[in-house]
Length: 261
Image (cartoon, rainbow, N blue to C red; front, side, top):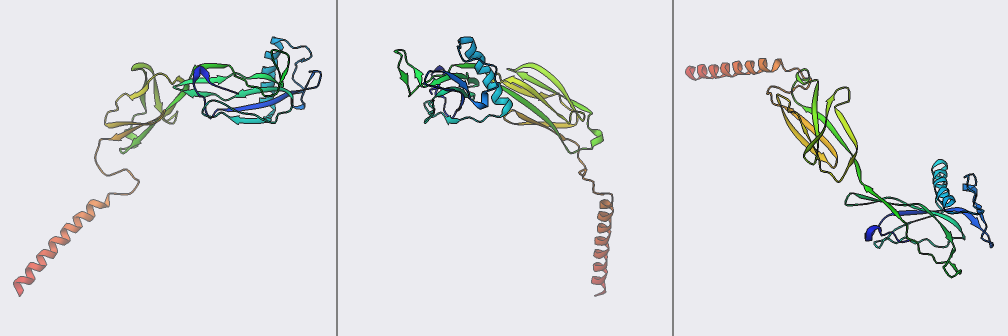
């Protein structure tokens, strides 16, 4: 099997083969036990029957968790090799391949092994090239708000985040306690340039960091004062004042001792 969509070498793409039907010496097809219940008549198939068989077989695989008879991964040339296969009708399907934010999805199809050549002879070494569907890569973009410093009661009840698509405003959302200060935009086209900003929050400095399409907005309080950690701080000034008094008393005592000497 060679998979080179638009002459791109699709390497490390997984392909699977499922045996859908057995074939006898008269080329009669009989559905295998795993696929015996699909509503397909293979006694005299035409193009519409083959198309329906692909859809029904894939549905059966998903519904029943059917394991592939063989799987293979394409090499740097987009080639995947399957060997030692008994004669029969097989479904070949592959995973999507992404390059430059283009998604290439191999179309599932049926292939007979051995295959009938144009001259009527049987081919036991078959080379197949799957067709493919092309689409744009879609991504989910997530934003999360974090607060740093300041009093909780002084924080706004919500903030506004703006999403930009290629520097044009796309959509704005509100983050608050109800949505756990986070939001996800689903199924965005990865070919566009997506950025976010926050409507400024008075009294806070904003920083925005991202790891891929996960964004974290941190608002740090601009107010000074002791940190709000839950520790009682009222006694600190008293201790400091007492220390100053003790130091002064010590100096006075040393001065008196010096005069006595």
